[in-house]
Amino acid sequence: MDTELQRSERSVELGALLAAVPEAMIAVDAHGAVVAANQRCEPLLGYRPDELVGQPIEVLVPVRLRDHHASRRRAYAEQPHVRDLRVGPDFVAVRKDGSELPVEISLAPLATDDGPLVLATVRGTKRSRRDERLFRRFLEAAPDALVVVDDAGRIILLNAQAEEMFGYGRAELLGQSVEVLMPDRFAGMHATFRSGFVEHPRMRPIGVTGGLYGKRRDGREFPVEIALSPLQTDDGLMVLADIRDVTERLEVVEAMHAAEERQRLQEETQRMNDEFLATVSHELRTPLASILGYTELIVDHEELDPELEHFISVIMRNARRELRLVDDLLMLVNIDRRGLSIHVEEADLTRVVRDAVDSARPQADAGGLLIEVDLPAPPLVVACDADRIGEALDSLLSNALKFTPPGGRVDVRLYATETMARVEVSDSGIGIGTPEHHRVFERLYRSPTAIAREIPGAGLGLSIAAAIVEAHHGSIRVLRTDNSGTTFGLQVPLTP
Image: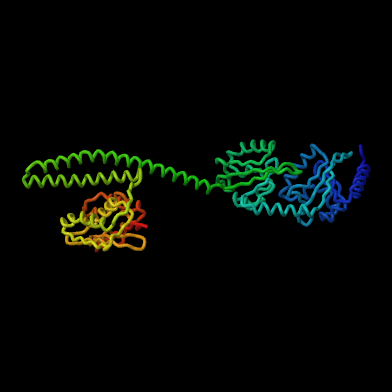
């Protein structure tokens, strides 16, 4: 059995060996205790050799890394070998004054009669310090949350964005298992995935197709995408995880999907409405045409007494009115399906307006209204579909006459600017009402005033007029409306 004297002699021999080394060297036993140190340790680490002897080696390790260092020390003890540790931002030593010093470390096993030792050569390095600052600046400058974990899944580095994203302080996460950042239901699966990644490390994204969530300190979950990058170091495999919160992106995608679904439903509803209108219109048009045909035959071939003739005229007037309504419905359906068909040729707009006014005079006379027209002397030639423009004017005139009480008047004015031919139709009627005048061109819209006064109409004429004018690259709008009347303006381009 060794005597105390023999052990003392061996300690002196070990001290002499370390003293001969030109760099700071520390001898550590199997339990992690410092058994010897040389004088070079004091200028580098601030400790005299006698202050280090008997201390655990972790006294030189930052608090945040001590648990991690102890596990690595035990792993090294199981398979001791000569090893240089030069890579990694966590290679720092804590000086006696508490400051941290970037270092490079070389390890070498030493068998002694007192048991295995590890000789650690410690070197300060400006390059390590510069590399560390650069690496940390990179982490902090990154727009995403970055977390670095070792091959056992322990967090060894993270940036401020990761602190903010997960709600933890940095000291709370260092040394923790990375599974603390994910919901419990993913922890087991992630541990298996992590083991597989360590065996076959490669850059890869996860969570791109959805279904991956992070967990904040308060327990709230949020969807994430993660890009993994392996970092091979002398201290083993490190994994850099770039974590991105995709909550806003998913909200945008969901909103887009909802909008697309609404659009699809609207289109389907419109298609069904169009088919319904087309079917109903055709079914109504046939019997109405038959009613008109037979009543005209009766008028042509029979001598009718005045009362019966009046009855038949009422039938014909209402049948024609319903037939116009059906034709309007058919036109709207065709506009929606195939667009409005127009046949453009040069036409005298003066004549088109005069014909529309002449067609409206019987209605004006029957309602006790005056209708006046102001036309330019020379012909006003435009490239248009004269019949379609005439239909639009018919709608404006009919609308003006319907809403003007007996004794009122309707004025029609045609004039030209440098590029446009303009028609204004003014009445002295009851007005549309300012809140809803912008809606009069909507299909099937009827103003509250028209409904309250039971003025006949289906709300189709102005929408058809608008479609006609737009097909000519023109415009139609309400220029004025109040309780003294309304003015509509229609304009189409002049012939180039």
